[in-house]
View 1 (cartoon, rainbow, N blue to C red):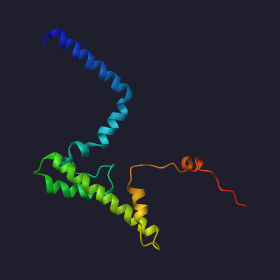
View 2 (tube, one colour):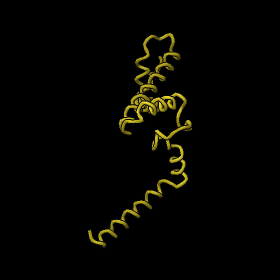
View 3 (spheres, helix red, strand yellow):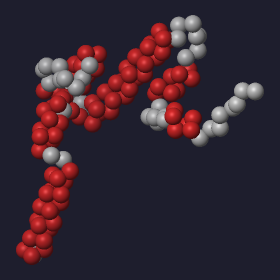
View 4 (tube, rainbow, N blue to C red):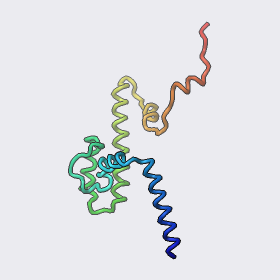
Length: 133
């Protein structure tokens, strides 16, 4: 690659970096780095990060012991699956506690585990009110 092409690429990359920095202020990025150290190096965490609940931190500790000799992608894949299961079980317990009288909480669980958020007011505005006679 000739020097002029290299200079053009460097200039372009520097302009991209400046544009990205305008979207992500330095103090915000520092906060993210500080709170996400456990994501970058999960095997080096010795204290509970503020971003993790106690239950999730216990899962991380268990996986640190189990996956130390395995590749990092395998660690994150298994941990992600198990945290999703842990979250689902927690929501299920909360739903069963709230609706003790109901034996079947399946419909409520579908709503709680979906990534789709509903806007009840918006949905209600689209429906015609029924007048009482």
